Length: 391
Image (cartoon, rainbow, N blue to C red; front, side):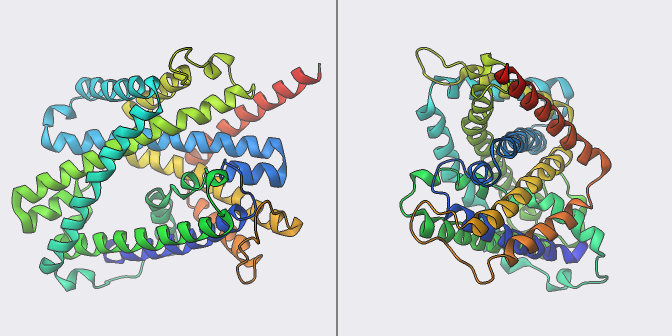
């Protein structure tokens, strides 16, 4: 996108504004735990809800594998030995093995790891923006050419990864006080805050690094920080990135295996995945299975490839959310207080669905095929279970 990169954030924020509005609309009507999975199931029944659950687990698996791959890439700039494939694979096995072992012991241990990482990951970003703003060159923000629609769409298809997460955050709606008011406020505040931070980071990085930003693919913020804070700034950003990504991987290892466990518990996957450890009371088999699959994907692909395929599934999940908001509004479903009612309630999910379809049109055949194959296998499992129950 060149100097027009901030435009991608604005387009992505606009899309997420539409999606967040539909999620807030549906979430204020369905005050049960489950997030988009719950909304879709209430709106369209068990099969479509089940596909939403599969998409939710798939996007989590591919996303955490992509972040783990990026974590090794960032760490390799500090320790070049990590760039060697055997060492890279060994470290990935160690990371996922350690986190699987921690989470298999219980939720408390896993949550403590996440809390520690969360406490430190924002500091480097705030330092980068606060100090870097005094060293920017405004000329780096000047547009030479306006990007075409395909370039914008492809950029947003990757960038949506940075905005994802709201569908996880609203999952425990059934455990929130007054979700009809709390859920909309929370998601809109999150969207506004993250958009402001992302654009500030992009503008500083662009203003400091200029055209060189495009070639700093491994650690762009670290390279930018080195221009005004020297080696200390570079090390701070790399350490912050590693902490942030490790925190993301830790959070996924706590949450995503539970989705795999739930699908198996409902009979759509081998029963072994639904087993509970007799002493720890954790879904240990699902946790270790998720860890093994994530290790395989992280070892064999790149962050960008995994993020985009994950985002294809995520956008389909958001598309289901738009459809569910329309249906729940049409039926006037409500399980709590007066639901959230935006102006022209039908406009937001229709507009959101249209933008999502436009972004998906920029995906490659390979990226769409991977998701289609997963949904085909999921459908086959659903049909098999359906007929086995009827017999």
